[in-house]
Image (cartoon, rainbow, N blue to C red; front, side, top):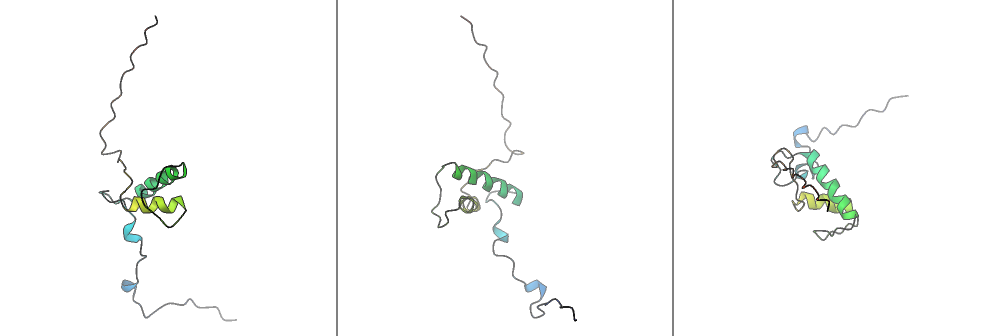
Length: 100
């Protein structure tokens, strides 16, 4: 028996192969690094908020909260804070309780 050969499209050069339509949109607007990892973390946290009952910021045809969260994050509607550039949180000293 003859082995099946892999079908290769020789008509389209590799340089002209279309990229996936969402590749250039997987980042948070305003994120200087354009981190895909940060995008995923922010969208996942937003999806948990939506599943807990928070209201959607956009009208979306999908009923899946993960899809809504991804689109909200992609549009820059979900605020996020970069821990490396965020100002340090000042710890407040607790005032002692007076026993009277």
